[in-house]
Amino acid sequence: MTEHTTESPADVIVVGAGLGGCLTALAVAEHNPTLSVRVLSLYEDRFTAHSGLIDVLGYDEQGAGTKDTPAQTLPTDPIEDPYSVFESLPETHPYRVVGEDGVQQALALFDKTVSGYCRGTPDKNGLALVGNGRLSPALRYPETVQSGLVSREEPTLLVGFDDLPQFDAALAAARLSERAAYDVDTITIELPVVLAEGPTPTAVADAFDDNETLRRVLAERIEEEIETHSRIGLPAVLGLDSAPAVHEEIQEECYARPFEIPLGRPSVLGQRLHAQLFEALASAGVTVEQDCTVTGYTAEGGQLTGVTVTDGTAEQVYDADAFVLATGGVATGGIQVRRGRQGHAVLREPVFDCHVGGLGTHKADGNSQHARLSITGERLFDSQPFERVGVETSEQFQPLAADGTVHYENLWAVGECLAGIEPTRRGSRDGIALTTGYAVGKRLAE
Image (cartoon, rainbow, N blue to C red; front, top):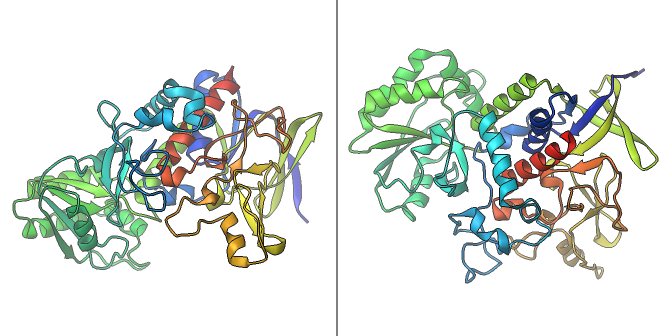
């Protein structure tokens, strides 16, 4: 039998503990520390998929840097100044709603909260090499990444590890050489340690944290191969805590500046970011409930009154005066998609049953392939309809019902669950999360 208990009410409950959920809670605490905030963390490994780079706007509204680039191509030409193209965004886009000042205020809170990050000067995107060889525009990036920015025209050595498939140094060098005006060379070496659980990025990082000798061995092996290179790129596995010490060891041994290359899941840089954000939440007095599943909610008189949460063994009822939806989009399950009759896409927001829009008006004609156009583009690199799917909101980021009225008077939504934003194609996922989280948190603190 499942145990059922009721906790003390909070002023604000934030459902979701990604970047948007964290910034919402931190903004409430920043502007009104007397309010009680409870964050429900739905996914324990949410940040393991985060590169550690903070994008704000990498590409224009067509998803490319120039108007001559066809819409049916993957964006390749990043913009330098994200603020310069805000006016080209739809009027309902979060950046147009809050304005440049609102975006900068959100970034200022991020800068205050998270240490060890750099910013473009003056607020220009930096281009960072990531694990698949792609160049990623970011307005904030870890200090351990900074020396590898493409704008620094210095001969570069990329170092791969034989047993770490998440980073192919030769592939990354080939793609970087297409854009860079400097020499890019590679070496691949054996990991200087044998790991019982296998050489995953997290396991390698743990080994560097635990073993100072390992850092010296790595530096010596690189020194044997380096020639005239002034910087050395390595996959971002140099420790969850010890990366600065590893960098220092390599620089002293090789007389070249090391930099980290962000990887995909499980991302060590994302885990470092997660640790700092959750430490900041604790310092601000925010309560975080880990590994939760929301199974229901209660409402009365047009307002939410509580949510029911389970960890698989017991149920808790959490009441609050205000609620924030920060569960992400289709990719994270914040918006659920299933096939209905005749292949139509059926969309659902599973926590508060908010109306989901942004899909368009494609109609199925009985042909399953044609019906699939409702959620995906005709070609692989098209602008994908599912990226525009989400919760439609008012200018105050309150979810709207199908008839355009506010769904619940005390409910707000932030981040990737919003409709019409195309966060991946435009390179704006983190900026939207930070901006909407800050705007809503500040409003709730009033």
